[in-house]
Amino acid sequence: MHADNWYILGAGSIGCLWAASLCHKGESPRLILRESSYQQFEQKRIPLKLSTPGQTSLFDVDIVSPETIDNPINRLIVCTKAQDSLAALNSVKPHLTDNCQILLLQNGMGSQQIIRDALPTQTVWAGSSTDGAYLSSPFEVHHAGQGQTWIGSLRNGQGSEQGFNDLSDHFRLKVSQCNTIEQKLWEKLAINSCINGLTALFNCRNGELLDNGEKQAWLDELIAETCSVLAALEICATSLKEKVHGVCQTTASNISSTCQDARKGKVTELSFINGFLIKQANILGVSVSSHNQLMDQLSAKGIR
Image 1 (cartoon, rainbow, N blue to C red):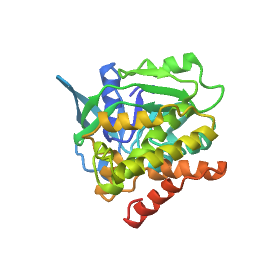
Image 2 (tube, helix red, strand yellow):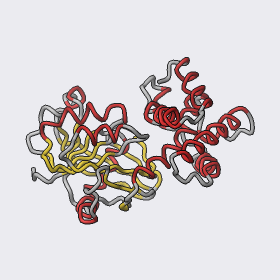
Image 3 (cartoon, helix red, strand yellow):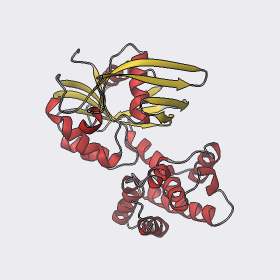
Image 4 (cartoon, one colour):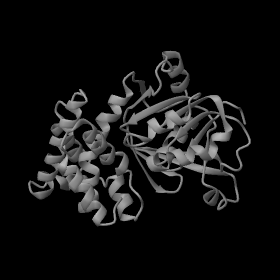
């Protein structure tokens, strides 16, 4: 195993999508699984299936656990849930080289900055993606919508164009460098903060939020409050209402990842989406009563 091979933490839809992207480019990524999951496989090389409209590809991918990694890690992609990312990284931290390139692909905000501060010598990149992907079964990923991923350094002075090229040359997916990645993360968080928690509360598909009734009224209140927070941060919030309604329309039949987690009784990423927005609003002195009400009602239903 070459020392520059990619390791991927998290074998969900995004982890499998990026593993397949690397395989398409002739790379040999290794998927890092939890020890309990890893022990379920007799073979330590598993088939990874990628389905795109009109095409299916099959790749053989190595799997490891934090306990069985036998090489230094110079390149790592973190695709775990936001609330799991720091613990997952700590499980492989002894294997990270001092100049390891780490790409974070989490929803929301907050977890990226925590990881950046916890790893002062490594180059930490954050990504914001509009790719649509889901798993039909373990290691069978469907690339449902070709999107765009913006990648930028979270540390000043480490976001060189050469560094980005070294990172992005390995990917089949469409990626672009972004020198203002935190603004991109905010833009995605703004949309998710209006849609995801609400779909979990009402246990509905994205399009059902545009009901011209209670759901849409609450959606529009969340949008207005989010615009106020972005304005206080001097982040352009032009047409946020149109963007949120547009996402609800174009993904009308989709069930948000937050709603899916809530249905399965899993912890959601809302503390890094609405929770992060509420913390920033409190610091800025901006009222976000509808966001607070949403989080309170979700908590009362046992959704967190």
